[in-house]
Image (cartoon, rainbow, N blue to C red):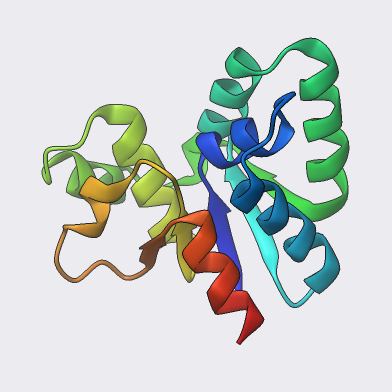
Length: 138
């Protein structure tokens, strides 16, 4: 299963007082690797760096170095990004949606991308950490 984890999942998992469902998801992904893979665009790396302090960011980097594939934003076809912007999304959100589609991810995991889940016919699911955990446990 291919997952794209939104910035907020990493921030909630690696903060000093982690959100349990986000931390559990990170731990479950580590336990299920390589059957479950994480893919991260540069946009999410930059956003995560802005929201974590240096020791937290170091822990995040060590995790993704072992568990994730990172990609530059420019690899996403321009037309795919435009499609998401035409849905009314802000550029960074459009980029994340386009990236998720482009890599063929099964799920975009986010605690605040609910507006994406209201878009009809997306080629991926948009789930919270808790719902993704339930999916992984099946």
